[in-house]
Image 1: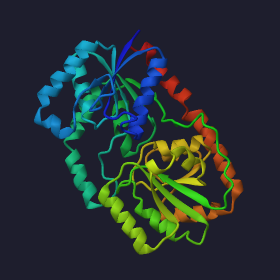
Image 2 (image 1 turned 120 degrees about the vertical axis):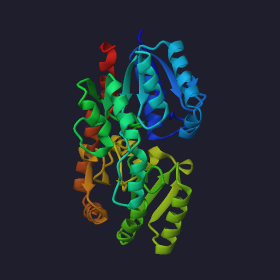
Image 3 (image 1 turned 60 degrees about the horizontal axis):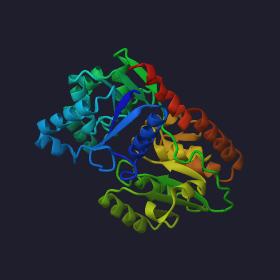
Image 4 (image 1 turned 90 degrees about the vertical axis):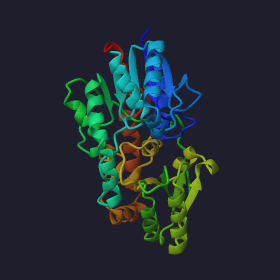
Length: 364
């Protein structure tokens, strides 16, 4: 049987993030497909190999130690293929570099890259200049990869820069999809007059939950509750968000820690999901909503225009207009919900993901 070395910075349940859920599910799928899988984490002792790499600073302080360590792991495990989850994680770059020196085939499961400015604010331009040094590294590593899994083969969005660079290499490019943890769960039928609008994910400036305050204020005459459910967060942003809600005085918005609720029930009991992030690729939370027949409203970011069970908006005012338009229109809500579920079954299911991953069977 072919042996795979699967590298990821984050793994569920220690890191219950989109990348964490993806890595753990990908491990299960590769094993179900008959591969022998050895997992490597940055700093998670529950995986087969704990690389014990805390962060970028740890690598900068002792680069040769970690390069030798990666080389030792590769020589000991003798994989037929090395697969890394996502760029920009340090551990991915280390193993991609070392694997090429050892003439072992490599594959990347791309989750998009985050380099260019998200908008025209000075802090994002400053961040971009800091990332400039990474661009030649990214280009070099992409040229050395044999197999590339991308969430979107056609987007020209800057979050898919790695895909655009790889397409020039005339090598194996495979479309794959994100998925829902809840695809086999039964849909809960909710009979409630209050319509819950659900926002899931990190609380920070990138996810841009401040826009939800304005949306809540301008829909306060409707029986709507906007629920922000989070696990990871930026402390300053969260505190400022709560202060702003108090100052504005909106009563139809709630902030709930994930530990105090159940994500499956939150999605099931919602009227629709909402995404105000200023940058995305293919967010797990919205896909999970689709799998439970929930549509979403979102800004036009990443690959979200590819989702059929959604309404993509240019700004806050358009989201508010569409929310008010849908409020008493059960026909269109039901129509979008049916489209969302069918789109999930066709394009974002675990079975669809297995078919994509199975394509590597004869490539190494």
